[in-house]
Amino acid sequence: MDTYDVVVVGAGAIGLSAAYWCSKAGKNVLLLDQFDIDNDYFSSKGESRFFRVMYSDPLLSLLAQSAYPLWRELEDDSGLTGILNDTSLLFFGPPNGVNTPEGNLAGAQTVLEEQGLPFRRLTAADFPDSYPVLQGLSDDVVGLEQPQAGVIAADRALLALRQLCQKQGVTFIPRRTVSRIQEAPAGVTVTTAQGSYTGKKLILVPSAWTNQVLESLNIQLALEIWTMTYAYFTVASSQYSYPLWFYFGAPKFPGDDTTTYYGLPPLLTPGRIKVGTDFTFKKSSAPPTSPPQADPQMVSLLNTFMRAHFKGLQSLAHDAVGCLYTMTPDVNFVLDALPGHKDIFLFTGDTGQAFKFTPVLGKILAELALTGVTQFNIQPFSIQRPGILKPR
Ligand SMILES: Cc1cc2nc3c(=O)[nH]c(=O)nc-3n(C[C@H](O)[C@H](O)[C@H](O)COP(=O)(O)OP(=O)(O)OC[C@H]3O[C@@H](n4cnc5c(N)ncnc54)[C@H](O)[C@@H]3O)c2cc1C
Image 1 (cartoon, protein in one colour):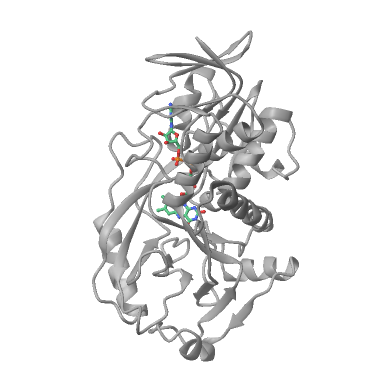
Image 2 (spheres, rainbow, N blue to C red):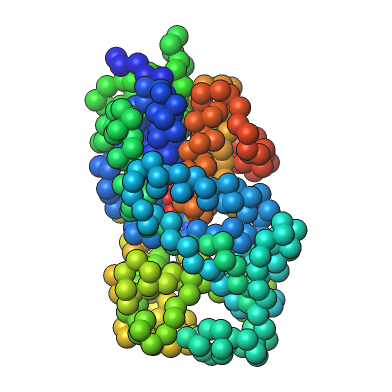
């Protein structure tokens, strides 16, 4: 049996980041994943993700502001530039857009004002000149434009973290499914079909598989696994400028939560934009047993939305992808020590928004594992807050 300072379970963005920070502190780290490093299951797959500080939740805005310099530090450490590519972000839609997992326009404006962050508010009259690529907007459309945003080259971010983990001596073992966790005299032991590994501390970042990983500790969380869909459109990017955007639509009936769409500009691949729905009809209490697939119904909604609101489309949606969100009931993260297990730390409930926080979430997990405390306010992410732990 091998013994490490820290064992990290889950080699997605956040687990890699935790391993990076622990090894940067000189610790002997083991990183395990049930799959190969690139696989079709994990939530961190794909070429791009949003970065933004424009949030309806003040804590997430502050956390994103903390993440920004750490992304630059990751670029410096790895020597890989172009991981976080600055560009401004547009929120738009009718003024009565619903509150969604991504917040809404009114909530975001409040937080921007409270935190003294720069932004520009747009009315319907501003759109034709500022965003000529948009069409079919309602007469009462409003917008918020915020400069502290960007496109994360997600695959490049993972590459940087993997290279740094390797350079800093992290032992990575793929195709190891952790099926059991036990306290041991020397720390915590995790068991896989191929062997057991002990760490003085254990960091768990198993996203959609959280409840499977926690089963042997008799801990279960109220999590839902959402299969999300995004796709690409070929666009006339030499004719129009395509922004980074979120559209918050008006509800068609009380409780309608199928109104939010998002898109990324053709920044990483010229002439190609990524567009997704921020809602799904595919929700499950269990992780998938086969790779998540794009939902044709969502692809059809993407085509309808894009044809209505964007000029210069040169294709319908293509190369559609299915990808998982792990949702908590209050759409907030879980980042905490496990109750009754002071040496085991968990990040889960990524709620479809964790990638932008990758460097800071990994840093927090490393701080907790190595010192027991963190400088960041993680109290709202407590596992003990109402509605998270399932009664057993
Ligand atoms: C369509 C889509 C769009 C998104 N857009 C954005 C965005 O624009 N901006 C943003 O910030 N975020 C975005 N996100 C969210 C972001 O991608 C995720 O929050 C983030 O990637 C989660 O990383 P993770 O490391 O927690 O989980 P994962 O990447 O899922 O990694 C978890 C790992 O744990 C491993 N594991 C699980 N169980 C075991 C076990 N028993 N033994 C060993 N290994 C195990 C899994 O194999 C997996 O590799 C998006 C997500 C999706 C799906």
